[in-house]
Length: 476
Ligand code: SIN
Image (cartoon, rainbow, N blue to C red; front, side, top):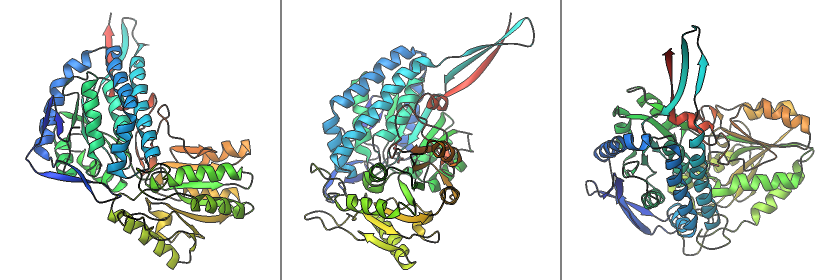
C-alpha cells in the first residue's frame, strides 16, 4: 500500500523528512510517511483549486456514483482496512471493522444526499421580480482530523464535501496517517478525479497555518480538542475562512431510579469503554440515583472486570493500548488526583501488564464518590475510567449534568416517558442518548454546543456546512 502524500494525481515524498508510524501496542514501527509542511499544503491547495471547476460542474448523480463506489470498496476491503487501523491506532479489531462500516456509511449517505440539494423560488415585493435561492459548493475545503477515529472522522467530512461539489485537502493525525492514505488510494481507484481529494501528512501547525493563510481555502473542518479549536478560530480570522468544529466533550451519564438497570449498564459499557474511552462523546461523569445506585455499580463492575485486555489484533480483545505515553500518563494523573481527593477505587486504577506488549495498557477503572473539585470531573480523561456519584432527585442531576463548559454528548436512562422528554429538553448538549449509549449514526446531526464546537456533521444538516446560499433577484 501507499505511504506517500497524494497531491493531484501524484504520490509525493515532499522534502524527504519522514515521521514514523508506530503500533501503540508494541512500539513496533509499521511505516514512515512524509513530514509535510506549508509547501506540501500549498501544493495540495493548488491541486484542489485546479480540480474544482470540473468537479463542481458535474451532476450530483455523477458525483454520487463515484462516492458510492468508494463506500463499496471500503466495505469490500473492510478486513485489511480494519487491520491497518488496529495496527496504527490500537483499537480492537471488532471496533476497527465497525469503524470502517461507520466511515463508509457517511460516504454512502452523502452520495444520496447530494442529489437533494435544492433551492427555492420566493415571491418578491415587486410584481416584476422573483427571488431565486440556490445552494452552491463552498469551493476548496480542508479537514484536520484526529487519531481516535482515523477513518470515520475523515469520511464524515470528505463524503459531504465531495457530494456538494467541493474539493478537499485532508490533514490526518500524525499518529494515524495510514488509514487516510488507504482511503485516498481507494478514492482514486473508484474513479475520483485527481485533485478532488488530496492528503498531506506531517506538521500540524505548519500545514494548518498554510490552510488558513491561503485565500483559496474557503472552509476548514476540524475534529479535535477545544484548545486547538480556539487557536483555529483565531487563525480563521485572516481570510474569514468558514469553520466546522467538533471539539472536546465531558459527557454526563444519568441513571434514574426508574431505569432498566441492565440496559443502563450495557449502554454505559458501549459508550464508555469503546476505543479505551478515547472518544469525545464518551461519558466522563456518571450520576446515579440513590435507589438504584448499588445495583448499577454492581452490574457495571462485573461488566468492567470481564473485559479482555490485550493486543487489538487478537480476536475477542475488548481493551487495547492507549494511543501514546502522554495519554496513559494523563489517565494516571486523573485517577491519582481523584483518589487523593477522597474518591474510592472500585476496580482497576493501574496499568495492565500484557505479555510481550508495550507498557501502555490501562485497566478499565471505576472510581466512586467523585466530587466537582477533581480533575476528572471537569477535564476529559480520554481513558477507560468511569467516575460515579449518587444523586437524590431529577433537578439535582440535570443541574450537575449541565454544569460544564462543554456540550457535546449526554446520556440518561429512564422508563418514564414524561421524564424522558423533560430531561432531553433540559440537557444543554447537542447530542442526547435517551436510553441509548451509542447514538452516533450517519443520518443524525452530530455536534456540540458551548465549547464543544460549531456546526453539525451527518444527515442533511452537514450539507449546509459545504454549501453557500446565493440569491438571484430576478427582474422579469
Ligand atoms: C468522536 O469521538 O470524536 C466521534 C465519536 C463518534 O462519531 O461516535
